[in-house]
Amino acid sequence: MSLYRLDASIRVEGSHSRAIADIVEQEWRNAHPGEPVIRRHVGVDPIPATAWATAVFAGRTPVESRTGEQQAAQALAATLTDELIAADALLFAAPLYNFGVSQHFKAWVDMVVTDPRMAAGTQPILAGKPAVLVTVRGGNYRAGTPRKGWDHATGWMRRILADVWNLDLKVVEADFTQVGVNPALDRFTDLARQLRQEADEQARRHGRELGTAVPMAPPKAA
Image (cartoon, rainbow, N blue to C red; front, side, top):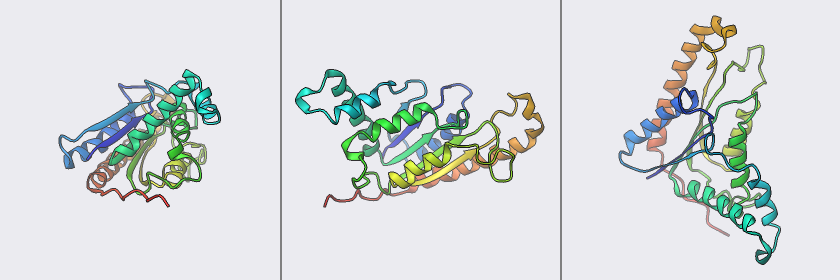
């Protein structure tokens, strides 16, 4: 058994998404001690900004005419996809940045879908694979809050991971991570503590579920 973990935070120390993902990972490790964890830190080691366009055009270029840069971009896409396919369980940690998807997470997704095995119209090669998405938000954008609907990231990530890639996805969401940092949010200290406790417990539960999940066999080619 192996776990693939992707972190999209631009921070290492003090990252809330990493801290909650650590809980998920530990629960998985409790079920699979000594088993490997494949890591990719796209927040601190980002996908090159030009790689996606290069890979796209490489796919439209005859093999014999592809440049070294195009070949390298395609090789990167293949490596990223290989990591997902090889793992038995998946863990993604991606914070909300400026009300949208982390550019690092988006660049990683864009590269993966350039691989022919992940192309639109193909059978989802990752279908049924157990996965957990951890996402954190500095404010609170849930139903009933003044900024409901300002989170333009979580829905998109769910769409890609659950609906396009057909992962068996569980999601952990934590709000008000800027409480204690932004003085304007000080009045929400008690609520932020409560929400974090709930998120941590949800992470433990989903981590245990991830540790006991049995991946579905990939669909057979027609």
